[in-house]
Image 1 (cartoon, rainbow over the protein chains, first blue to last red):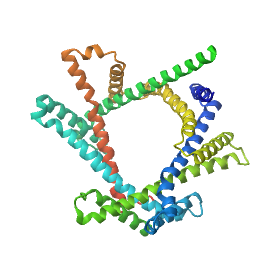
Image 2: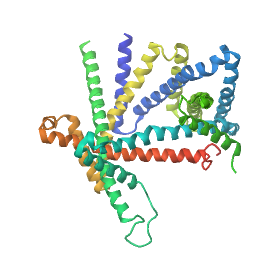
Image 3: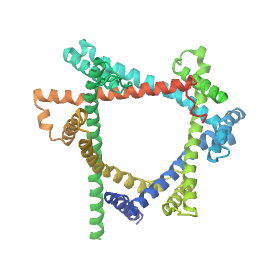
Image 4: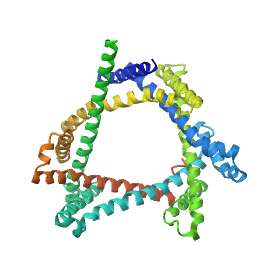
Length: 220
Length: 210
C-alpha cells in the first residue's frame, strides 16, 4: 500500500512538472516549491547529522579537555556566522567569512595547480613520446595542442584598435583564436550531444513510468 | 586599507593551507605545518556546514516573510514552508540515514529531477534552433555539425561503420577531437581560479570586507 502511495506521488509530480511544456503555470510551481522545500529540509538535516553533530556538538559534550578547547574556536566562529541572518549583526560575520575565504582560496589554488594544470599539461605532452605513440601520435598530439592553445587564445580579449577594420589583436593571435573557435565548437557540440542524449533517455524513462502506472491502475 | 584584520586572517590561514600542499608527508621537520593545516581545514569544514545551514535558514525566513506579507502574500511559499518543516522535522526525528526518510525524500526528489532533465530535450532543441536563427557564424556551423555527429555516434546508428578498418580509426580520431577544446577550457578555468585565489592571498581582493 505504501509503495502504491509513493508511486502515485511520483506519477502526479511527473505530470505537474510536464505541464511546464505549456509555460510557467500553477501546477509546475506547486511541484517546484514542494521540491525546494523538501530538498532544503534534507540538506539542513544532513548538514546537522554529518557535520555539526559529529564535529562540533559531540566533541564539546563528550570529548576530552583538549578536544573541547579545540572545538571552542569553530564554535565561536559558527556563532558569529549565524549573525549573518540578522541585518544589524551581520558585520560580526566577517571574521568567519574571512577565514572561509582564505582557506577556500588556498584550496582553489591547490586544486587548480595539482588537480587541473599539471594533469592537463602532462596529458597534452604525452602523445609527443614518439617511442610509445609513433608518428600518428605526434600528429594528433600537435593538433590537440594547437587546439588547446587556440581555445585559450580565443578567450583573450583586448581593447579594440582605434584604426577602422582592425582589432586589438595581432594577426597570429587572431588566426590562433579562429582555430580555437573551431575547437570550442567541436567540444561544445560533443557536450551538447552528451547532455541531449542523457535528457532524451530521461524523457523516455518518464514516459515509460507514466505508461506503466496507467497500465497498473487500469488493470486493477 | 580596508578591513586589515580580516585580510590578515584570510592571508595567514590561506598561506598555511597552501604551504601544506608543497610539504611532502615524509618531511618530519615540517610535520607541524601539516598538522596545523589539517586542523584549519577541519574548522573550515565545520564553518562551511554552518554556512550551508545559514543559507537554508535564510531561504526559510524569506519565504516565511513572503507568506505572511500584508500586501500580496505568496501562496506558493506556504507550500515551501510546510514542505521544509515536514522534511526537516522528520529528518531530525528519524535521522537522514533512516530508510523510511530516504524513501520519502527520494519519492519527491527523483521524479521532479528526472522530469526536469527530460524537459531539457525540448529546451535544448529550441535553444539550438534559436542559436542558428540569431548567430550564424563559424562557431554555430561547427557546433551543429559536431553535435549532429556525436548524437549519431551515441544513437549507435554509425556502429556498423565503426568496425570497418580505415573508417573505424578515423571515427576514433574524430571522437578524440573535443579533448582539445575541453582541455583549453579546463586550463582557462584553472588559470582563472589560480588568479582569483592568488589575488585573495595577496590582499588585492577582499570579498569578505563588504
